[in-house]
Length: 166
Image 1 (tube, rainbow, N blue to C red):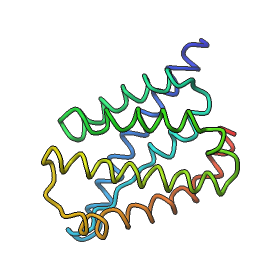
Image 2: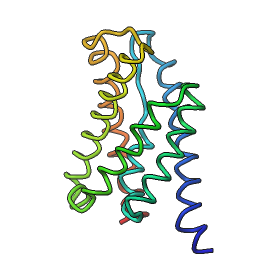
Image 3: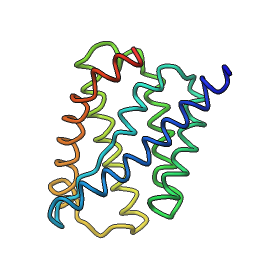
């Protein structure tokens, strides 16, 4: 029972959030014009809180599996999330005591996490030629709306996450 509670349940929660996150991103992108690509990063926000309870190794394994599933389900090519989610998890685990000290640092942590995830995803997508968007268009039509949405979404769900995890 302890194994289920400590390892399987968090994995299942992250898996369900991954599914919700992708479909929410698809819904948001379809609601706006063809130019604006608004992406939800609820999974990254939850990683910040879930990683409190895990060691770096367990965090790495769980996020590697979630990254593999994310890539296979949404991109149909293994690589972007399989690389970036475990790396994000390692950084969050290593600096968790600093990132989670107060509400302002948690807010800034979400901003930095989403920013670097988006930049890294764009850079890797450009290198692998999955996108042909210019960096300026990416910043205006994807990065800025995504940052605003995720920070507002974080402010909305922060009390719930703090009640559950802190």
